[in-house]
Image (tube, rainbow, N blue to C red; front, side, top):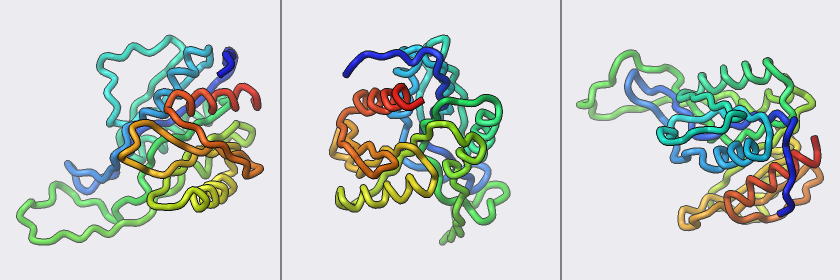
Length: 220
């Protein structure tokens, strides 16, 4: 891939899973750690961009020293990511937002106060949808270049593309990264699709990251 600079660009990246509370000590989450979003943020910083990374709880940063132009803000719960996102979008006019975080789709209708007793014979949890963080990004920053991620399970590639394009349009995104979950595939494989519906298949976490950043370089 051609080398290019992102100096002068400001990029906001979200990565990792979110938690929603069951009770004081238990949460609902998902299996994703945020490696692709972290890779995007790190490469963008090395290319000279001013990067803010909102990073979830499952990514270990204990031995990592970020570049001076990579500002990492941690969150655990859905509400914390929601608050951080709104704060960052209102703080500065980011050239691009890469929303790759695996955000919780559901939360408890009513959180339990305290700790649910472990000797309970059965437990029924009533879940309600969370709001879609990605859907308000353009409301706050209409001119930012928005990259959305879409993951599906057990669908064909044609069906994935159809779902992804509708999802892109719904969120007013400029680009969407769509993939089918496959635990047997060690590295990422995804389709990159724009507002025309045209897509191209890309393999490898770093290649996907560089392709996204090249789009940001060319279109902002």
